[in-house]
Amino acid sequence: MPRYQATDINSVVVVIPSYFDFVRVRNHFKRETSNFAQLSEYSTNKNITNVRRKFAEEAVVSTQSTGLKNVHHVVFYEPPLHSECYTHYVNMLGEASGTCQHTTTLLYNKLDGTKLERIVGEKQCKLLINSAQTTHMIVSS
Image 1 (cartoon, rainbow, N blue to C red):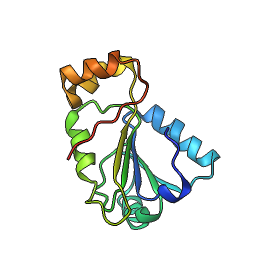
Image 2 (cartoon, rainbow, N blue to C red):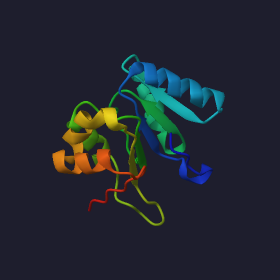
Image 3 (cartoon, one colour):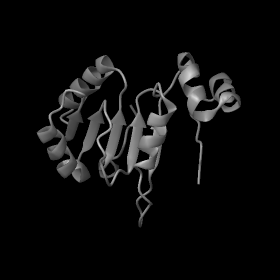
Image 4 (cartoon, rainbow, N blue to C red):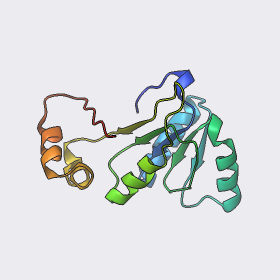
């Protein structure tokens, strides 16, 4: 997981497709005593409503789309299986206002090539997977 400064942590959504990884990250946040809220396919409507209300102050760990507003940062724990999921969360980012900059972070490895290709295309995927660099920045307008 990327490290964020304490002042940057507001309005972060962490998208985790696998429930096993979701449990691992949730337990990590609990150990670190991070101020976070969690949502999964097992969340009740009441829990979802409470998380939406608190969202501006906390990080949200999620395995489902919740229609959150005021999202400033989206972190994908791994590339989503369907590229539409990636687009959906990126579109949740509002317009940057003042000093607030919006970011999307996508964690991947060489084994995620097929899922990554659905998001960035075949040519760009090959460049990313075969690159000697460990970090890449893709800027879109």
